[in-house]
Length: 170
Image 1 (spheres, rainbow, N blue to C red):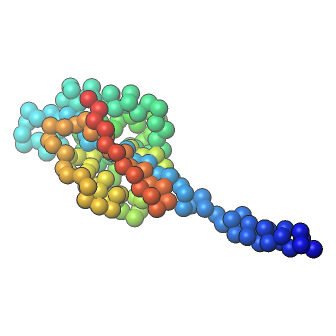
Image 2: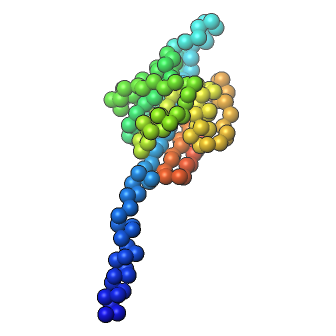
Image 3: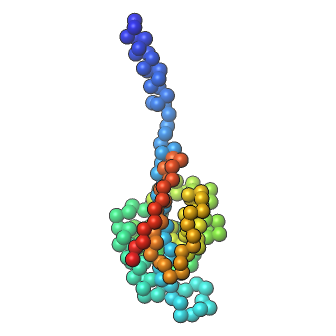
């Protein structure tokens, strides 16, 4: 009788862990944020320049760097320089480049669409750190220097835990 009672007690306390679905809370989302590569600065009046030769090389270098990353999506603002930076990686991963609005950044819709995925986000010197800060929920990073196209921000969200790191890829 004592062993039957012990067995029932064990089963009773084990049931909640069997019945709870914790997969939704434990989904891991990983964001890779980069600024666009070097842009053509010859025409100071052009608000939508293409990448220059160095920028084209850097965009290809990003694609090589991300070779082992299994992206589910690639996002970019709708500017030539960001699209051209994202293009080599998206092409290698056989992914379409999805546009995001740099004025809304980390919206509820974006968070929902990317939950549980690994995502590349290509932005600008001001929007990239702002986007990272919004995901982190704190103002941790300042705008990127206008001559710096080498920073990679990696933000991982798993349940209620968020981690981040910054790497410079020259």
